[in-house]
Image (cartoon, rainbow, N blue to C red; front, side, top):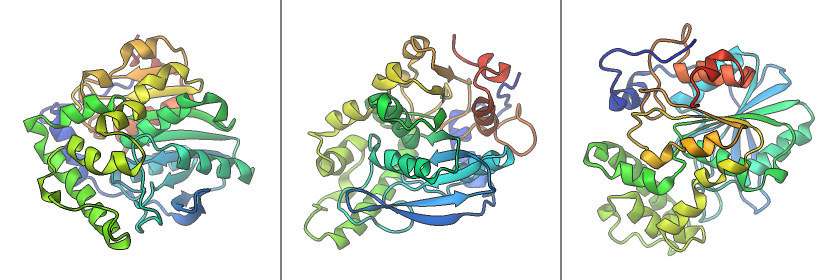
Length: 328
């Protein structure tokens, strides 16, 4: 059985979170860029890594990540190693170029994922697509599967959601704790810089007054994310976009992997009861792993434990390695 085994200091969720970001060597994965024109006149940049397989792993990155984030490249390498083609989707304005509209992407923005999947299905090249989402991307994937199960293309087979903030209000509260200040500052700095860049393209659309005084996601989402995308305020955005409320409606085999010591997640981000109520959904909760970390022994060779577990689920969701670790 493949359990995540660690020793000090990797028993710390903060070490687990920060170590890969700082020290992990970026995997070499060859990409080919495709720009998909979306139905609303915008675009999404897609990065393909193909070997001629008829199975595809579609990877969705987290907040302000991209297809070349270390965790995306690590998962892409693992998928290629297991015989899958890879499609790494960049959320709007995350592929290296700002998108054409003032609106960008958010934790509940599922429209682009749907259009990407329809495009993949139209190719007629793949018999199956497995979704692999990290953090915000994981929330998008879960919400997509459950908000309208009938619209999910038939080629979508299995989904793995890693470090998923399935209750966005709870996750935002967790990140307001003093011990998470470094993450909050880092992420808000990235978001501020993007809004400033967008304001140069769309003069007068964004009010930048007092940007430096924004200290929490609630303040940022109240000011920008919610009004930009038609929500009343941050709370309305979080409650309508959280994927936890959609878990009961998911019909495709799905696995959530959330570490107990993930500093980005509050207690409501571990929806044990909802998972137990849906036979299509499993949940693995290692004691350590941090946020998109999962550094430790228990997986063979160069793969991080999360990559090994994801590939085991994609290959066979009923395999002992998954089921013996899953919440009962």
